[in-house]
Length: 391
Image (cartoon, rainbow, N blue to C red; front, side, top):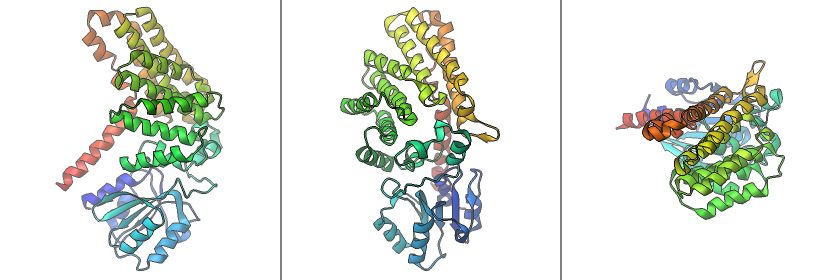
């Protein structure tokens, strides 16, 4: 198997339903790999239930037949992987609005225009199962989003989000410009785009005001996913003030707003942001104002919020009775890890004044979001190995 073929693995989302046309056993084995991917013949597929088509070379001589199959059976957020010998089909897909996500060796990866061409009936072989079984807000995309098909390509991490950063940003801007100001669709796009800007070190006060306006305009919303984005956006505004603008007062204001938003309208898993907010508030009071009393109170707030989150509705965080949410325990572990940092800080505030370097080493705020960071690093390591193999 070539390295380019091996790279195709990274464009398969967990639990994708895949239709493969290939004489290459290596590719077929790859697509049956360890990420719970499914495979079935196209003729037996119900309409609009295919997540990914792969057309290898020397498979079908008829472009119109291939295009008809894609249009009939591909989900609105689906992907198509084509060998580059299908020049006519590539041009047809571009004409039909498919977005080119990547080129990997001899293969071109396209993503359907899930923003423009979605239909009203939402199908996802995993999320809908959990929503129907558990009625959990974590998977209530068909109920709460205007266009639930944006979720996998834009919001969801763990191998589903668009891998082309430029295309991801472009789609976020389109969603922000397309959907209403009170929709979770817009809130999610603002958050994902905002984190891209934050990671790039962009200093843009006007964009932060746009994030704040979304939050302030939707404080009375009963849409669980709008509430979820308000908590996340306030936290995002805060870390921008803290690390990009170096404005501790601004950071304190928005960390507190994130913490004070009622997580119970959504789910306890969103408390990763609120507990991290408490840890950051406590550290600011300790390091910038030498206020041990306020610092300890906020570290304690973080610990207690983690306890509240876990006890609030644990079954709807992780699942039950054989229906277990894939990311439930991982996110809960992340929540508890952040709380453990607050426990250390609460018990050792005196250490900060005796040995600041040791305290900062032990109270490692980089670990806020540890599980997510580890997953990202694992993905980057695999991509680096693949690229090194091409040298």
